[in-house]
Structure formats: C-alpha cells, structure tokens
Amino acid sequence: MDLFLWITIGFIIVGLVILTSMKKSMESKLAFINSNNVDEGSLKQAKSIIWWIVGTTAWGIGSMILIVSWFHHHFG
Image (cartoon, rainbow, N blue to C red; front, top):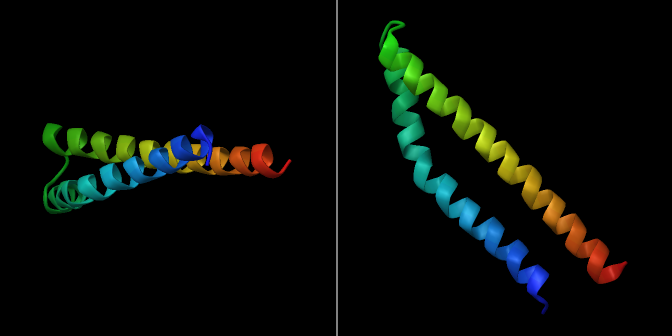
C-alpha cells in the first residue's frame, strides 16, 4: 500500500476519533442553550456548536476528496 492511502486512512480515523470525543460536549452545550434564555453564555455555546458543524462538514468533504483522489490515482 502506498503512502497516500495511509494518509487518507489516517485522516479519516483521526477525524472520527476527534468528532466522537467532542460529540458529548456538543450535546451538553445544546442542552444548555435549550434550557436558558438568550444571554452571553448561550451565544458563546451556539458559536462553538456552529464551528463544530462547520469543522465536521469540512472534514467530511476533505475525506471524500481524499478517497476520490486515491481511487483516481490508484485506478486511473
């Protein structure tokens, strides 16, 4: 197996580990927002949730690009 495949697999696995480890804290932040009225704390929590969603989306798109690139490189 080549280095590009290992980079792709590593990127996906590390991303999954990070996202699953952060999932519980994002759920608690969402519960905090739902239980409280709008204040400075809930706005800060909302921004962190939004950035987590943006990061998750970027990781997903990056993973798809790496997989497609590996297939194109390997079979193309």
